[in-house]
Image (cartoon, rainbow, N blue to C red):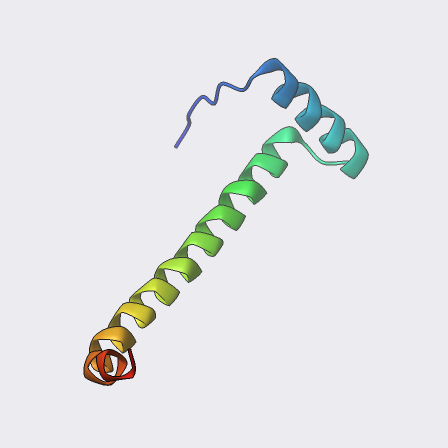
Length: 66
């Protein structure tokens, strides 16, 4: 799927500089950033789900410990 991303001028310049330093395209850096974001947020969602389940499981004990 194709899409347009509008960056601020300073973002574009920083991205261009980083791409030159790494010897890769700006496109490759953006794809890597999206992959990193998706991986990180998927992990965070799993942690939130596990915490919610464990809180429910141990709710009575947690309440008694207050």
